[in-house]
Length: 257
Image (tube, rainbow, N blue to C red; front, side):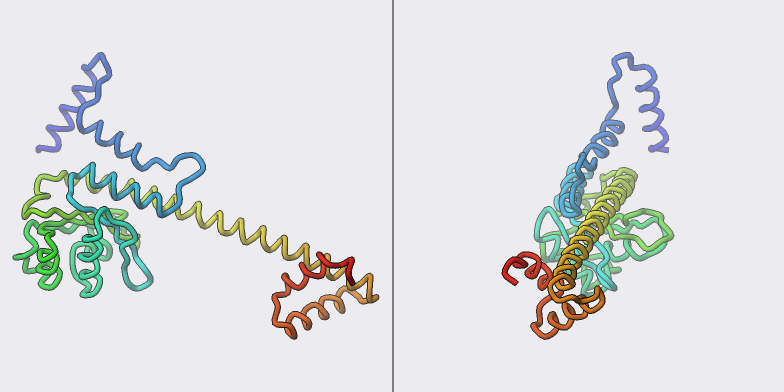
């Protein structure tokens, strides 16, 4: 009922406001989108993750925020707003328990929370360890929330105060997780495309320089194309030098032959 009332107020404010002013909920969503926008030219994955954790901390109001990502059969924390989050996350990964693990791997909404980690009976190893680090309440949202596929990871929100996150807007946090996942997937796709482009360009350059070296041997020694390539291959193996490097040297020093 509270959410419906708030949305109704927002809608009425939007319809009736001649000045076009935005309500607080609309402002949060717009700020959220702006914070995660990938600028022209693209941000790297690391930059996107840094932007995600700092925007998440501001939007939700947590003391500390970290990102959990799948790493093979385990998990890793690539970025956080405070190194203490990595220590708390590491306890979860070691014992395979805790909110970020559950939000990443458990089916359903992709949300796990605790108002008081020291007394929470669900996570008997993680809870006291996190409390000893000074982190007393937490919640995590999976990326993507409510996704049948394996999730990429989770956003982890910590408070130093028991009950410190009880007032956080769960809906905003779940929407943020979706935005974050989209931004991260976009950055990963760009990096993969750039890597493939680089590898393709390198392959073309290698092919061209090997072709030049073959041409030199064919001209100077009267070899066929196959014989020239076989000579390059055997010489590369004998000298323990990469074929491309050998071909480049031959092409660069052709006048000395």
